[in-house]
Length: 496
Image (cartoon, rainbow, N blue to C red; front, top):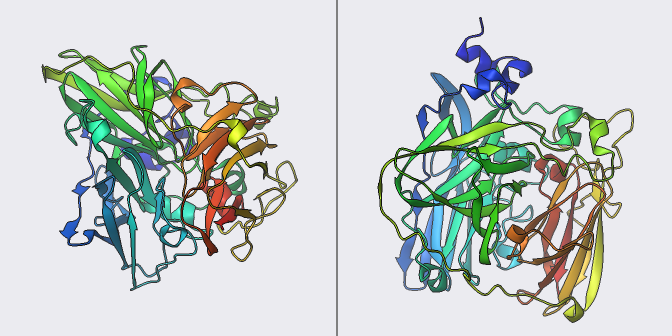
C-alpha cells in the first residue's frame, strides 16, 4: 500500500500518477484553497512609485506536514503581484539577501535594456539594485523572474518569479471582471519534483537538459491540489505558464469553450472561443469563465497533439516531444453566486499591427540542438554550449544582432529540432504574422512576447523597435524552456 507521502515524494512512477489520467488521479480531491499572491502597488512619491522587493530564502509547505526549502520575493515562495498603470513612473528596489547572486527580469515590459533585469544586471549578495522606468504600454499581464546566466532554471524553480499587472483606462472601461482575488484571479501554473527529504529535485540528468525539466506535482500559485471558490457568475482567470519546460493544452472538463480575451501583451481585438488552448513556458492568456450556482468545473491539461508531430521525428522520442498526459490543474467551485453582467463586446480594443511590407528587413533565427541524437551530453546545470541559435551558443561578450532605432522588422524563427520551443524577445511586443504560411490561431492574434515554434516549423513575427537605443547594453532573445536557455539557446541584440 503506497501512502500519500510516498506518492508525493517517492519514485517517479508513483509521482507521475499525479499528472496522468490513471484511476488514482481521477479520484483526486482538490482539498487546498488556492493561495492568491498579495498585491504590491508601490509607495507614491513626487516622481512616481517605489516598489521594494526583497529576495530571500525561506521554507514552504506544499505537501502535508513536509517543509521544502524555497526562494521568494517578499515571502517564502514566489513574489507579490506588482500592479501599476500605463504612464506610471516606477522605481524597483531589489534587495538580494541570498548567499548567491540573482537578477529580476521584467518579462514582457517595454523598457530600456539597462533596466531589463537580464543576465547583465546581476544583483550580488547583500546588495540592492535600483532601476527606474516609465510604463509605456497598455494593460497586460506580464511577469518577473530570475534571469541569472546558466542558473535561470534552478532559481525560477526554487521560487523566484511573480506577476506584473499593468492597467489602463481603455481596458477598465469595458466592464471586465477586475476585483483582484475575487472575480479577477491569477493562476501561475508550475510543475515540480520533490526529493525524499521534501526539497525540490533539480538534480538534472542528460534527459532533463535535452527535453526540459518536467515535474510530477502541479502547483498553482504554490498550491498543490488547489481549488478556488468563485463568488460571481463571471470570473476572469489570468494564467501564466510559469513552468520550466512543460507545455499545457488547457481546456474545461465539461467540454465548454474557453473564452480567451487576452494574451501576453494585453487584450485581443475580439474574444476567441476555443475548446483547447496551448500555453508554453512564459506565455500568458486571460480567459472568462461563466458558472452556474453549485457548479464545479476542472481546468485540465490535455495531450499536446501538435508538438509531438511536426517533422515526424517527435514521436521517436517516445512521445516526450510534447505533453502526452491528461491531468487536472485546478477545481473551480461555485456555490451561491452574485449576479454579474454577462454580455461581452464583440470588439474589445484596437491592437497595434504592422504590415509585412513595412518591414525594413527580415532576420532568420535557427533554433539548434547540435547534441541531440548523439551518444552523450554533459549532464547537470551550467550546460552552456550544448545548444544554440544560428549555430552559436550564448556568449555574454558577443552581440549577435544590431537593430536600427525606429525600424520595423520581421523575425523568422526556424525550428530545426524534434522539440517545440517557445521563443521570447526581450523589450518588445510583437504580432505573429504566420505559422508555416498559415494565419495564427485566434488567441495568438494579439500582442505577444513569446511564441511557440513547433518541430520543423517556421514562425514569422513582426515588431517595431521604437525606443531605447543603447549600443552598449543588450536585450536577450532565447528559448523559454529554461534548461535550453541555460544550455546556450540564447542570443543578444542592441538597438542603435
